[in-house]
Length: 318
Ligand code: XMP
Image (cartoon, rainbow, N blue to C red; front, side):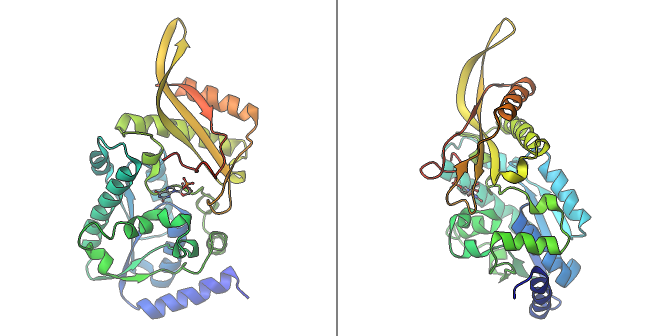
């Protein structure tokens, strides 16, 4: 019978056998899969696992700092690389969603390759690929590993892609990955984290991206997510986030007429992201959250709630 404990034991042993004293590089995304893969490998080979956590500047508010600190707290050999400016530069002027995804994928590969080169004699590339990624479901668009896959064809392979690949979670579903993580005493905050797209806030800022828009969306998203947590709704929702619309609308503030940004809030229930229903959040929650966003976040004067299900809508807007 499959149990998380037996999976951990067998996998750690198999990894030790396979990898021996070699060095392994792994890209952490902050998500469940890469984090659980890292902890498994860390158990097996300790500091021969070199983790790289790239800040693309499109993460949630404070996420880079807090997740990096969590990784360090777990004893991982992790290097944080703040490449925000490089990503923002590459995105400047791009509005098309696929162009934005490509630019982010390309810069990620460049940054990761630079870092991998600094690890002497690295032999393996570890990835947090899970079974649904293998069968090319929706998650095949996800995560650093998938970003890499879809950019095979941009020219010669970057050097790290010539490494031998190790994917310890390849046979598992998401819920099994969470159980494996829990059995290794990983933080519930990491295991319960909502899915978050690899291109991050870039595909939640409709149209072109600027540092100011990222800041606005991070603030809005933080109010929404913090409120979901304080109302005990976070764990009942499969995925949630805010979208910055390319729309200004008229508002009024004191005696002044304003003409500012509109944001949409999105929260869905799902099991695998293939289909999704919008969540019936309490009106009181929406009321409080909307007021708080408009009062706190400069530049936003209107909040709407997305009541579309997938299909025919998608979870993301881009
Ligand atoms: P959609 O919008 O297709 O999203 O209904 C389904 C799930 O996939 C995530 N998603 C992405 N994840 N890179 C990712 O890593 C992407 O380009 C991407 N696009 C969508 C989305 O957040 C949802 O969980």
